[in-house]
Image: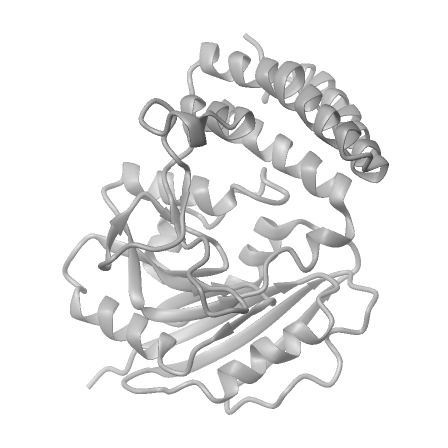
Length: 317
């Protein structure tokens, strides 16, 4: 009888004790009907010693230390290449899996082995135990416009909400969030992993959309529960986080949207979202937030200028 094997990849950047807590949750996780293959921690040049004194696992634990931060997508691919299990779980270091989460995910995917379900996500909860962002719609120009202007709160029918915290039953969704991203290895290999053109953010969105285009489905599994602290790394570099969000949003539009939608998004990023952020910061006298927004958008404009002059990746026709 074949026992499915799961490899777990954790990309770390200065997450302190959260990484140790994450691995400790794997130590006590139930292993009903599956085997833990490799746990691979890929450290993107952390400086806080977070990869030291990690809990011991009853499975190989490999720590790969990069001399520089190669980005989240590239580090995920780097880690996945070191395993050979039937499944790959990409797990954020600021998560803790509930004891039955992995067994529930494996059992579900094994039971639907003949289906087109290739990606499984968990029900994410916050520190209070309340549902947090677990899945989302694929990004659209209308949806992003609603989020940056607040129109998704005022007119949700016209500007549909992007992320969701909870739904009453498990079921297919456009995408599950990357904090707990459980993938069949053959699908991961078929898509050549994550697109490393995304340094941070949108890599799992792009992967899920490419999978859907090949007929593979993402599934939100309520029975698999995981705690997610959120933004532990990115809170340390707020301006860089905003820049990478803008950059990856634009990269996604370049890959998957029409030329007109792409240009409209860039205009909205610069002419609508930036002034709105500055006005909010000034109104609350949060000058640090103002400086972060200014720094992020300066980097974004430079990125647009560079991207426009790259022969094989032009944003403009």
